[in-house]
Length: 156
Image 1 (cartoon, one colour):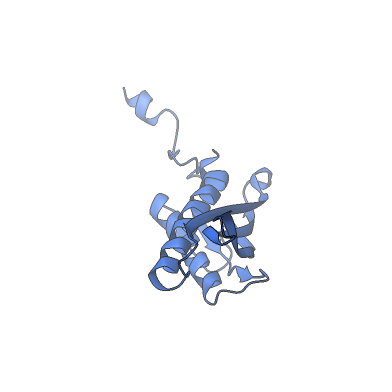
Image 2 (image 1 turned 90 degrees about the horizontal axis):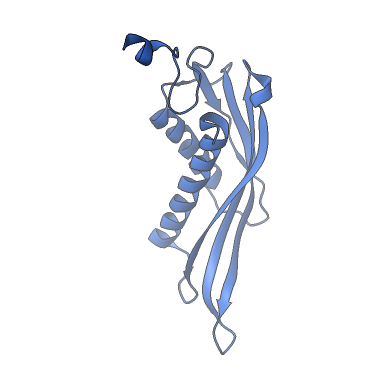
């Protein structure tokens, strides 16, 4: 029975090999989209740090990490998705895309550069301000950061 539990060595269910990776860093994600939303880059950087801290035992460091994330927000766009009979937007969509570069200094074959994107639909008569904007950004970042985690650490 001991072989069943310990025979595979220190491996986590997230896919992170605990023998090689002990630390990670998330460099500041710049906001390079044509439409700027103030503070978005800071919020995204913190959201990515939080998901890794919450789902792994890796330690967050400022430099020299085993795993490094960097990139930029490349799209922040609001567009109509459906129209009413009088040519008004019945529904709008906020889309955010982030280009991510991931480096694993212990396994260069795991390095990755990929664009991650998600959207949030809301009523066309509503303004994307206040709590509605906060909810939209939170839902989008929750999905994007989970997708980044799965692609880089969970290997899904």
